[in-house]
Image (cartoon, rainbow, N blue to C red; front, side, top):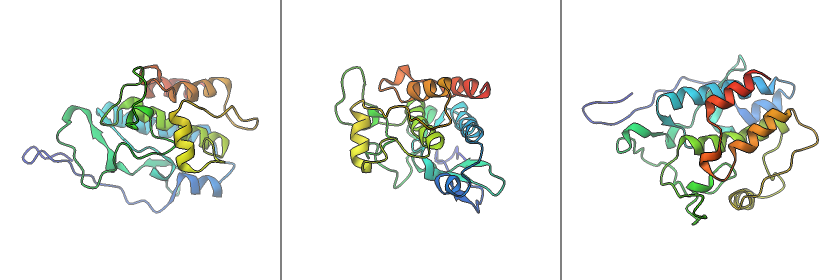
Length: 202
């Protein structure tokens, strides 16, 4: 909701009596993972169509209801691109917090000129986070699962990427999508619309 009087946004969440995506996949290892990924991409697309970016896409921020339908939650870092001064949620996470899914341009580590820093999340940074989530959904493990979160984050920020696992559910096209979406340069990442088009023909 958006107040034209106070110029503030408010969030109304549907009550969810379910599990986050990581918990759900542990309980339902044989579920159709490409279908889940496609539904998540459509939800991200709905946000992006509203000129809004999530800013914190990760497994724990996807809740799965009793019917197996994923829902995006954790919108405390959401950023409305067309109202850049209006969305200032209290307690929002700093953009330089490190995690595997943090896009390089948000890390504030003085990356190369080819990776300009950004002070707020973007649609491209959402797609970087989406790719990390897609990797875990399809392989069963996050990138660099053998490392601590901080060590893995630095590896990702330095441009390192895990090799394609031997056992996974990703076709050549889907693996290409993951590689494109976690590209270090934001302009080289796929849009969520391109991702949906690719996933729908799988």
